[in-house]
Image 1 (cartoon, helix red, strand yellow):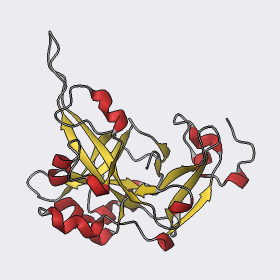
Image 2: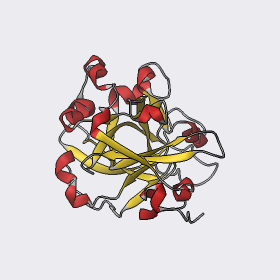
Image 3: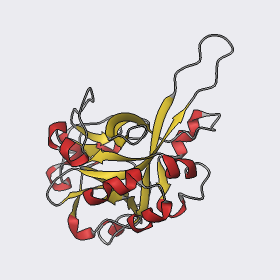
Image 4: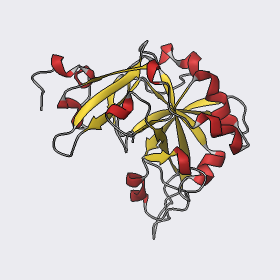
Length: 235
């Protein structure tokens, strides 16, 4: 799965990669992005006229959901069953996006002794993770005005490549820049089949980090410090 990721690279350094403008997007460094938080996503503008950078809440709420707490169970979507799962199939067909990231975490071991590992590109650059988004309208209260719609997302995962498999059997579906437009704009889902594969292991580097990152309330460069450099974990 993918349960945490980072985006510490200044926005000005990656807008060209995704062919978007920052606009009013907040791009403060973030080292421990967790479910239920706001994330930056790139998607096609309505009508297909270019791309836009938007803020989405991580944890998908399907349009048909009655209870928003379903988002807690839908932070990831398995690539192998996107077209079959009721929670994902409509978004897979019509509402695909890319989450902007420059690293992600996976945990190794059993609960209570799990050790976090950090993964990034070998050149330290930014990448796009395949994702789906939805717009959910909360039910109207018994009295008063209906709340506005909520836009949420889920990260698509695939089987792990050789590097990540040493720690976990799943990883986020990372897409090469040359495949961004196909993911965002394809109308025939058969065109996407070739994209649903693990990212090459030799393009990633990884190392264990300290337990500071285990708490989703923690943020800052300490999250990505190598474990040997974080002997005195601040938790």
